[in-house]
Length: 351
Image (cartoon, rainbow, N blue to C red; front, top):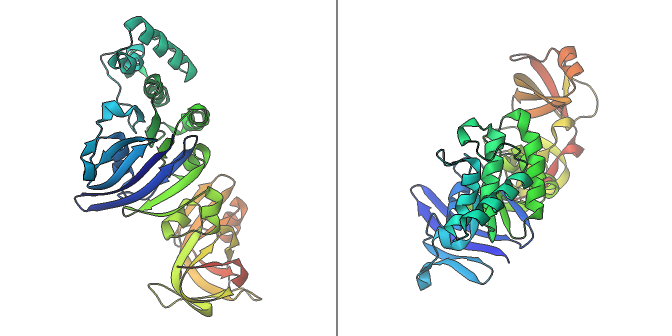
């Protein structure tokens, strides 16, 4: 069955107008900046919030449709939800927590406990079933929460930043395990993701929500090839500039800087640039680059085998360099360097 939502909802300053579809055997990651409406959207699907207009449905079952007065409460939707914080019942054992859902659905006590133990094992929880939530690590607590959601045998699965409460040492392992469980779940899965790594690892498709609107969707590779906003550029690790093109010159929005590009375009455009295409020099370089300016190092951030260098200048830009280049160029906060970018490195997209 397919989970579909096409609705409007206003809550305070947030004006949410979303059209979303999650296939019967698909995991979709919902990403966006803080305040975009991601968790509110999840609340609508879970039944915690009623919409103002539109429709929310799962397969043939209509969950929310104001025009007909139809509204199905959360407990009747058959949705499994995993929140940012585990929210386990502290007075129950981990077995009791997982068995709670089946018991609420009328499953006999013995069968519910057996189902709980089976799901704890399947989600990698090897602790004594009598263990209380207070004794769990962040990763263990999220595994128990996932087991509790799955033990209800839900029609759809919703996860709200399930890795945010897990420390860095356990995040990679839990991310891998979670991806396996999502693929094995027979139904639509929607995951609110914090970053590109989580979205790429967990989802088949990414939906970008900004200021209450879906602005772009696709695989991570598709978003990286044509980022539709500065947020998407940051998400996939690219520099993105808005501007106005006049032939092969783009005046960057908000300033007087002009970029020389290899693509002939007219009107409003977005210009994307990979950080590795940004070359840094101690003195002004000679040669072919058409885009050269002086900049000040604002921050130096290690990132796996590279180092991301944030630069303030006529066009604020992020460069990726090797650790050796950091030492060679003396890259530290406040240092001044020269930036050089070839016109062919820019990807220009009409807005």
